[in-house]
Length: 211
Image (cartoon, rainbow, N blue to C red; front, side, top):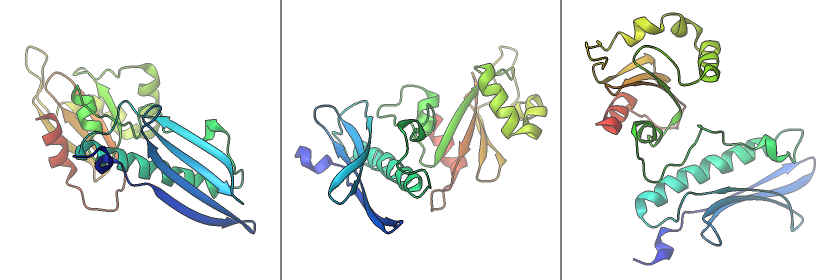
């Protein structure tokens, strides 16, 4: 199989803003380092560019599909920013985030396996006693999901806890098509999803991810 067969498809969008035409182009490049680059052109000149390095080269159809999904998200985010009044933005305005839209080529643990499910936006780990992995995440979760945070231990107890500290394994839909609780036995994860434009059985997909 030729390496060219694994090149992810790029995206190009043209917009008009303030009477001026802009072209946004996002593409994959393997040299000198594998990366996704979004460039904004006007009148033949590049006025803005953002690059996100990838953890490795794309060398299979499976990885090609993963990179194409990330490429589409990066392009969509660039397009959203380009339509704002403060365009072109500074680099700090364009940030995929530490956890959001993370590309994992070879998942090594349960968190990374959950992140690989299409449509998953955030994965937040909680130990079996209800402790978040950092005060920052705990505060963020409390602000965004106050009712759930107040009854956190009751929700975790959906999965029975054994004398050795482990819990039952499983997936529970906390908020329909939005927030899920996943128990791997040794720890739990809150998984926040976002619309993908297609119907996804997240309970099944998340269960398969940790099986």
